[in-house]
Length: 336
Image (cartoon, rainbow, N blue to C red):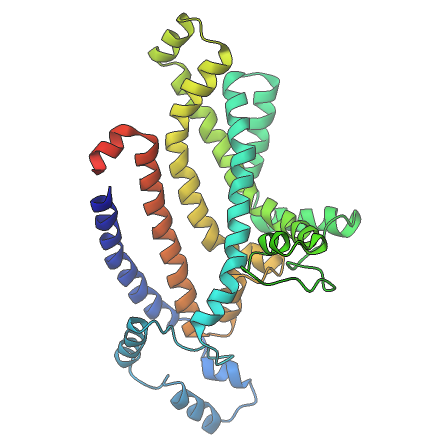
């Protein structure tokens, strides 16, 4: 298992290097000049040239790349062109917000999607099955921004039950311990902060979870239907096992293995795809930070955030591979 893990970690190095080269090259093709964006439309040519020289943007692309890689080797992602603050520090401040949103959205999707898929598979072509398939189709097809606007309109504007944006209410000071507002509220035993964190999390979490829950529900349903038609399921029934034992212990257990891949990959996609949701709900995470960086042509932030997302994506794929080994002894033997 350890040798497998080492091989997987070593194989990630060329992937991250390729991502670095592609991102570094692509951001230079974004239309617009960062110096002009930072100084504004009233800047003179001399001011623009001076800023480009200060930021070393007038250097050849190869020299800029070598400088950037040299900084990376020392753990330096550069400084934001807009704020002048170290990119690594800025990302570490915002990363807990993105992780908190993505983790709870994934948990919500699993809690909703898996039971719906199982119930639909055990009642194929029933009214419940038809309704859940229709709802899951809507969940898969509806754009995230449209669902976000509908939820904001209904639950924030008309009903006034939930806040429309942010992580905490303005009058809540909070106790930044881990960066996860829910966890910090519990650790500080601050009921008001915890309740405010839950209220602010519900809407963006639902938007992110909707697509994964719908996808997972349909996937588990189809996988369960195939598994329930296998010979060992009929054997289990012939032995007189109860319906719940057959479904949960034999059917669901064998259906969850491929579902782990879906959840893992979608969780990784969710981290990168949170840009839109974080922007709509003014969620102060890495996604919103990256969106602002793209608007400002802030090259170091775009490169740093993309590397962080790439690192999280490949790390998630390794974790999924390890979970495969934990859940299936045959795969575990191949790993060892």
